[in-house]
Length: 286
Ligand code: C2E
Ligand code: MG
Ligand code: MG
Image (cartoon, rainbow, N blue to C red; front, side, top):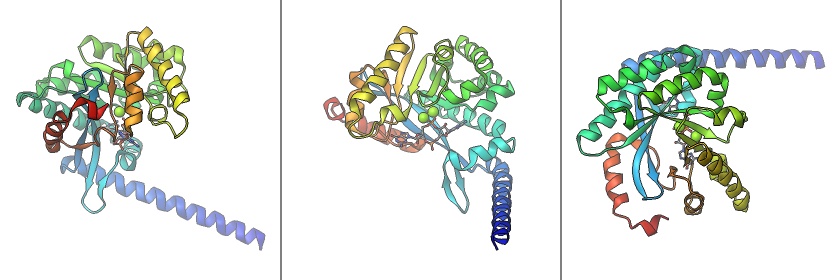
């Protein structure tokens, strides 16, 4: 009986695996059409410059407006896109859409710096620099208004290639940022040598749990000191409370972003949010 039960478990397990693989294949084939059908959208989350309290930029975050399943988060489809070789087309769509939107805001008198997320496979493919240049040329956006972000764990996959491509981007005027800094386990020695102008401190450090303020403060202060020594600015990501914003400001982070300031929103909502934000006295925010 025990053997039979074991066999049944194995059968159940393979059935689960088959169902999961089937689901991924369905999502991949739908995703292939989604880009062409205009089902991908970018939401933009405001980035605040702490010394002045002004919103100086946004981060572009991709979503999939699925015809039946609703608005899907990157975690629901980007891993499948990577497995099915769809990241190239998605990444180029993101770059083109974000740069065009930023150029359109600039034409309307709103100058923002837009950050776009890049995956490890874009660096591996070797097309990152050319794809960024093409988006800039096509949109007419000055390179100074674009930041390319790559997560620390993605940088760690191939530090040398990432470093070479980041250096080239920075020579062309595009800023490079290391995302989720302090959330992975990469070598600090390698990271301080990266050609980057910005470190985005991981949410796990910024959104500290109740009662862990002093430990979080020590960790953030260490990153700010390290960044300062490298001539790199810091950005506190995932700021969820007024206390966390106050801490990031006190410790000398240059930028902050998080639900406490604003959630990611469709492009058309940004001007409305900015009008409300600018209308608030600085003391109410800090
Ligand atoms: P990320 O680049 O670290 O982006 C920040 C994520 O944290 C976003 O989730 C954002 O909505 C969320 N977030 C912002 N503030 C807060 C906060 O205060 N609290 C909490 N709990 N979360 C906050 P999202 O949009 O689901 O994106 C997840 C990840 O997917 C991104 O992490 C990024 O690594 C990746 N991603 C998003 N868009 C793209 C893209 O266009 N291309 C690539 N390659 N990756 C992308
Ligand atoms: Mg990011
Ligand atoms: Mg992050």
